Each structure stands twice: as structure tokens, then as C-alpha cells.
Image (cartoon, rainbow, N blue to C red; front, side, top):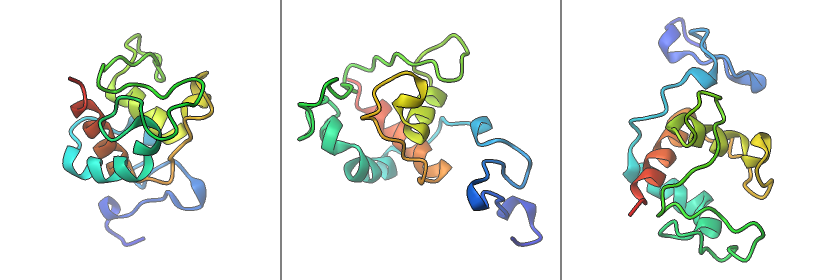
Length: 130
């Protein structure tokens, strides 16, 4: 880490606390770049959720079927704020997997992605609603 705290991240060795002392769950998840998120989505999500997000990827015969993002209906309230499907909820599902919140363990965690990458994936998923 450099002496500049804003550049330093203490997320080494699996820690979830940044150099500023904020927990990763305190990140503002809105405002990502959907264009960058599209590339990440194609790599990590499209196999199950399909290129257009309709839940029709090549792994779609799974049970339960992958979520259809084109509908824009999200059921998990991962942060217990009384509002299911917020950007924070989507980010938590991407980061920790649906199984961590009582959903299907087939929705694997992608916690190796950076906070910015998760923010971008969330922005792209939001853009898929028709």
C-alpha cells in the first residue's frame, strides 16, 4: 500500500474492509458503466442468463431456471432494507451468490470481481429490462 489512503486497499488476505475503514457492503452500487458491464456479463453471466438476459443461456435447462433480467423483477432483499431488488441487493447476489440469501446455489458467487466491476455488471443488468 502506498501512503495515499485513497489508493490503498486493505482487501488483502480476504479482508472486506478498505483502507478508509468502510466495509465492502457500504459501497454505493449505483452509477456503474453498462458498456463495461456488458463485457463482464458476457464472460460470467450469459452462459446461464443468455446474451439478452432472458434466462435462456445454454445452461437455461437448470432447475430453477436462471432469472430473466428483461422483466426486471428481483426478489431478494439482501441488505434487509425492505426494498428487494435494489442495486445493493443485485451487487450482493453477484458478490456472494444467491445461495447466501436462501436462493439457488447454482447462482455462483463472483466475489473475485472488483467493486467497480460488480457495479458495472449491475448497471448492465439494469439496462436489460424491456
